[in-house]
Length: 220
Image 1 (tube, rainbow, N blue to C red):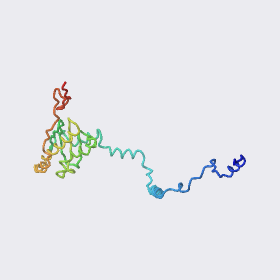
Image 2: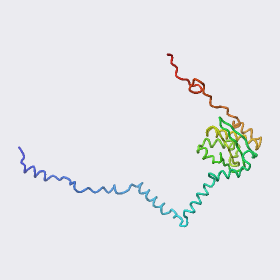
Image 3: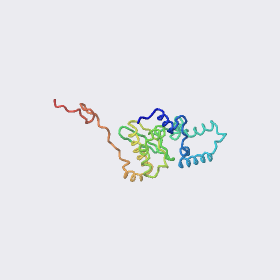
Image 4: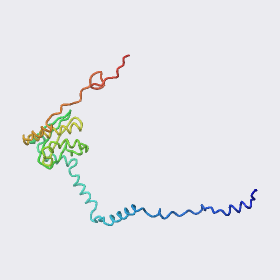
């Protein structure tokens, strides 16, 4: 039996369709923060309340003074400090030695101090680019004897790269410690710190790409 147009219209009018004109309110659970987030907000607010307020009299001049004290031994000031510690230059000092590795040569001076290391009038950490292994090379002989906080090391190094220079400094420091006391030879020798490493890069050969690398062989 066919339905009439009036019956279809009445049927569609009775259907309860949701209205899209008004947006639905968000659920209440989404508005409330999670327990972990709520605890974090409480901790942040407590830390902000307990944080001390900055001093009113601390102006830019005081901040610059503090930064100047931290950077006192930088640049020309550091060069002047090293020259004051070494009157007459490296050659006029009492405890000196020379270390070599590959093509690097390091002249080392030891003085009583607190364990600072200066290389070419610069701080060792800055000169060696903060590499922990290279910085450790400079202090291995001192640490072997327990003198890492008893002597300051002043170095003038040239030639080679930073790795070879660091190992040259290690040999120079070990040789300088022998001038302090001949008894230091036994522990330093047992650690192999007094042995000059003679390995260098092998020279390139004519007709080869490197020292031993050859071009690819072609039979025809």
